Length: 64
Image (cartoon, rainbow, N blue to C red; front, top):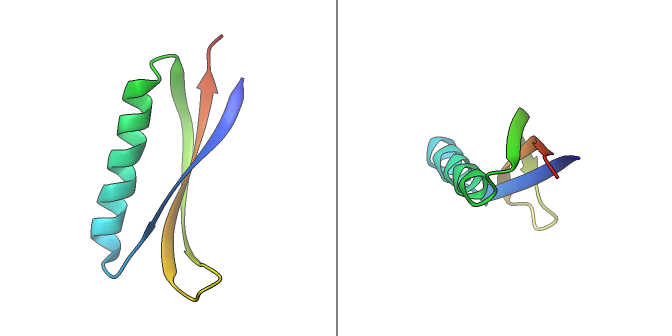
């Protein structure tokens, strides 16, 4: 089954936010050994309060 997992971090420093969301993805993958990473897309978004957010959309295949 294919899923999209979303990892988001508010940032003042984009590089440190990228490290944090990558760490979160790696933790999630470690906790879900039946998941295989297919693709990743990273975007800089603005939330409803006007804060900059770095968001990673990770597409994963989950084996049943």
